[in-house]
Length: 138
Image (cartoon, rainbow, N blue to C red; front, top):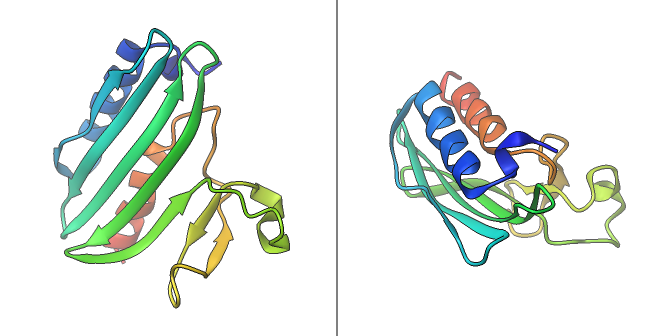
């Protein structure tokens, strides 16, 4: 079990630590519990170059798993892409990373590709920030 997903305190510390390591200008991400075992992480992370990551996660601390998530990446006001875990079982292109996938242009709502870097059993925030950092550096 990933240590960061074991408790509200551990995940809050993880978020703070990770956002300090990247080119983050500010973060509004908060982590709170809705029960003894379930937490929510939600907010936005503002990254140099006009990038913004919007996150929402539901975490089961008893199981050490992210139960559901949605991540959206913007540059200024333009949504560049997003990740979600909504299942699309009839799409064979997404089978290798089911249910994890990324929505990309063109036709961003319907154009989905596999997302091998997204997981339920470990935090995704670091991977998302690395991806944005790579995009921003061209």
